[in-house]
Amino acid sequence: MEKHLIQKAKTGDKKSIELLYKQFYGYAMSVALRYSNSREEACEIINDSFMKVFEKLDHYDPQNSFKGWLRRILINTSIDYYRKNIKHTALMDIEKANAETMEADVIDQLSAEDILEILRGLPEILRIIFNLYEIEGYSHNEISEQLSIPSSTSRTYLARAKKKLREKIQELNQIKDAGAIR
Image (cartoon, rainbow, N blue to C red; front, side, top):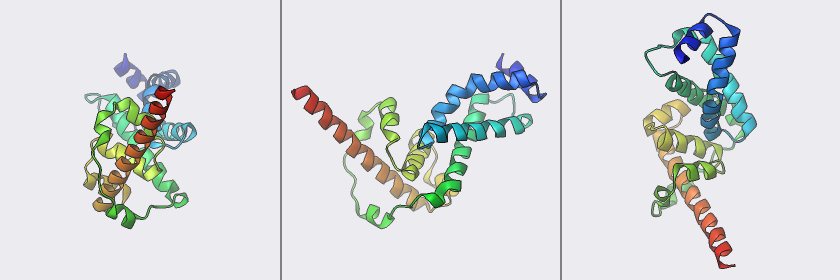
């Protein structure tokens, strides 16, 4: 069904294009939300991504997973969106981050769903690097190339993201503990 839909979409069939969009919208939203600050930004990333998908559909190799191809486009579009809007975002002082020490890795104790739920509270650059490294499996060198930053900065921001996540987890645990005492 999916391959047939893609073939028809390649010919410009509007109904097939619409069905393909609807079929993969939920998946696209789940990826875009990990990289965006809001649902509105995620929608913008999704729309830009699908525009690229439909423009480049003839480059898609049917022997590969369409979902994987779409995921790659979504990630690259998210990074492009970040780069385009970086002038509106203040970069962090990495000198302070270098002086910080790492605590025990509390994040390992969380489920992926728990992490994604609190991940949205991170500053944009930390969230993007955390997603690329921990969730998507990119190396620091690949991240540095994608974001045009030194790989040491990628490592620093990842450490900072983990520290902020630990702080958020501790806050949530304190709230849970306070609720359990009552």
